[in-house]
Image (cartoon, rainbow, N blue to C red; front, side):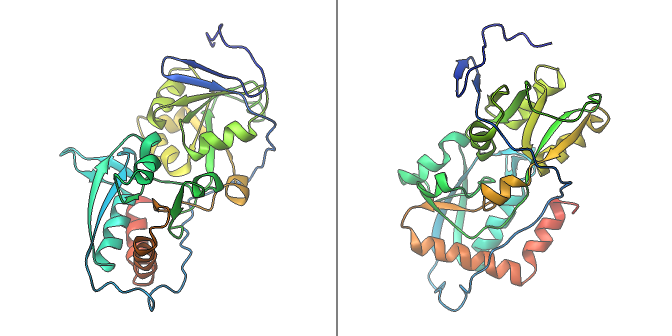
Amino acid sequence: MHNYSFLYKAPFLSVNYQRYSYSIGSEMKIFFRSGSIALLLVCSQHSSAVDTSENMSVNFVTEANYYPFEYLDDASEMQGFDIDVANAVCRVANLTCKFHNQSFDSLLLTLQFGRFDAAIAALDITAERKEKVDFSDSYYQSPPVFLSAIKSKEQFSISGKFIGVQSDSSNHDYLIKHAKIDSFIIAYASSSEAFLDLSHGKIDVVFADQAVVEDFLLQEKNSFKFSVKQTETVFLDAFSEGYGIAVKKGNTALLERLNYGLETIHKEGTYQQIFSQYFSD
């Protein structure tokens, strides 16, 4: 039972209340297809044209609260799939890399203002983001999914549902543009907060990246309570080109090094080794 008496429905309404922001979008076409994690690396022929003889220092920024892509271990050191990929790229491209933790909603701004050199944080390459920053080739691709309680027996629909999503993420942008007019989008600072409210019955659905959802289902017998109801494959077909590393617009020298590094770790098998450490499929 939801207690959102102050909230009413209207197209593209946004209401901010404490840490929540509620938005209502337009009609969404529902696509069904069982999905699994997919890896993607769009490799151009970078190796012959890039000079890596001179070392370059790179300050990466991320948000270390998105397991398994980036997180802090018991020693408060950054770990995760993205961090390992970035370190491998730095090794082969002769880059000296450091990592810094920042809130997700400010990552691209830090690049635009020159505070950091590159951002790696499970960032989908979208048309809107490409207007603000430049992206490397894509190194990972997987459609987001809708997660809700197993006990729900009716055919899945987001109509009339309260949907939790990470604020300012590409998943959030997608819902704002395409969610049904009678659905309620609840934006959280992190996916973990959305999962917590789903567990407590405060929302009906969480919309998040598949790998993050799969990790949640492995915790505390969550797989007995919740399940993936829908894989939004159209997200990749029409909205995102996959994950990429972002740099300030015009930073061609760094972008070439990053693309060279991604191509090289793919060819030498390092990328697949890293992938296998974090994902089962």
